[in-house]
Every structure is written in structure tokens, then in C-alpha cells.
Image (tube, rainbow, N blue to C red; front, side):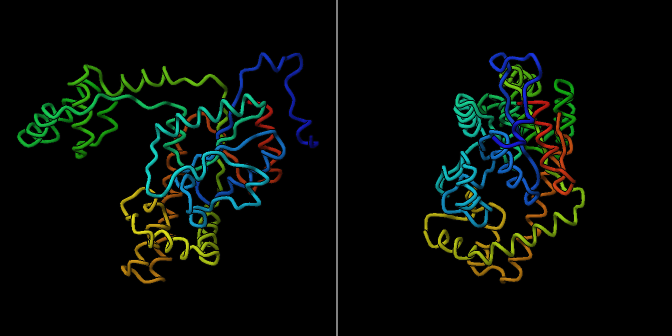
Length: 328
């Protein structure tokens, strides 16, 4: 046990057997430094990593996803990576099922599950559950489509606001698909989307404490520089050859979730002859910046979040202190 580990102890008079088990959710934008922190926590705080990344699940997609290399995986094994072929899909519901099993195994072994990644939908599915909505009803759907044509979307939005003001506030009047689906759910089930989500949140309440951390560089220019530098490193490591091997398989196409991953989609377009190499590089870096922006937007309104900056002094020590206060 390291000297840092020895400082993380249960409060005086507590009994470890009586403690509610905990998990750590380590989020953040791409290229923010989550993996480096996660490895340090594995080595210094008896954690075990579960990947929360919708790209790392794919076998043969290593360089473009910034998958940890063999040396890193030897130091800090990751669960839920390399579990799907690029031709296969993987839903948030499947992730929730799998991650709960992995959490149980890690806790049974006396370690702390450390969930690391930037796929916010997966984190949301774990922490809040997924609403089980009724299947689409063709008759009701057709009636709503006719109502939209005759009366306009604004009329449907007012109808939704009358029964489910929370959903109406969230759904734009010019979003026909989500608007009609919300009304369809109500007409088919008699429950609003808001009611179904609240019921699901109650049922999905997790039986352990959760420390939610976000690795965030306060200087956005530093993050952008890291993104550009990392993509150049990917090219040097053979990213083009990696995607070419996928391209030449013959059973993959750009509409698959795997090929829609940032970087892979742009490299695919280059290999297909649709863009120049310089344009591919530019588009890849811009798309990665846009991904980081979306991730940070999610995190801006994330509840119960502790933000940590990897450029701060004693960064690792501050995070270990948070673990000691909230989880361990």
C-alpha cells in the first residue's frame, strides 16, 4: 500500500462492513486527461476501471479511439472495452445491464468501481435509468400526423403543454418527431413522458454512493491544442491504416455507429475519395472539438458534480481527498 493509500481511511469509529459501497464516475471532454487520472487512482486508491465510452467497445478500433495501449492496460485493466465487432450496435440499455454486473463483481472483490469516459448518455442511463416507453401505435401516430398537417405543429405543442408542461418546455414546437412521440405516449398509455421518467428514476435508484467527477481544463485553448496534437499523433501511429483495414472488410458502411465515431467518419470519407487528406485532417479536428463542446454542455448542467482541473497543483492529491471524503 502506498503512502497516499494510507491517508484514505474510514472515519473514526466507523465499520467498513456497515458502509454503503460506492462508485466513482470520472467524466470529462475528450483529450482532457481522464485516462491518466484513472490510472493514478487504480494505483493509489484500490480502484478498478470500467470504460464508459461508446467507441472503446469496438475491436480493431484502437488508434482513433485513443484506446489505452498494452502497457497502460497492464497497469490498469479496463472493463467493457473490445466487447463488440464494428458491425454490431450497442445500446445504452445494454450498457446499463453490463455495467451493473461489472460494478457488482468489482465491489465483491473489495475494490472501488471507477467508471471512466465521455459518453454522457451512458452515464445518464446508469444514474437515472431508462424509461420503458410504450411501443408506437400506427393508428395514433397517423392521427397525430394528420392533426399536424391540418392544425399545425403549434397546435400540437399547445396540446402537449396542457397535459405535460415539463416536456413541452423541453421540446421545441418545430420538432415534429419528438412532439408527436410525446403525445403518442400519453394517448397510448395515459401517462406523460415526465411521469414515466420520474417513475423510472425512482425504480432505477442505485444502491450505492456515487462520487461524480469531471476533468475540465479551464483554458479552452489548451484543450483545443491537445485535440489537434492528439490527432496528429494518431496519424503517426497508423490511424489511416487502421481505418483502411475496416474499409476493406466489405461488410461495414458509414451509417454504422462504429464508423460514425469522430475521426473514423472523416477518414472513411478520405478513403472513399470524397475529400482530400488535408481536408480530412481539418474536419477530424473540428469534429473532435465539437464533440468536446457537446460533452462540456452536458456537464454544465450535471447535478452533484465535482470539477477538477488537471493543471492545478496537487491535482491527484485533491482527487484522492475527494474519494476519501465521499467514497472510501
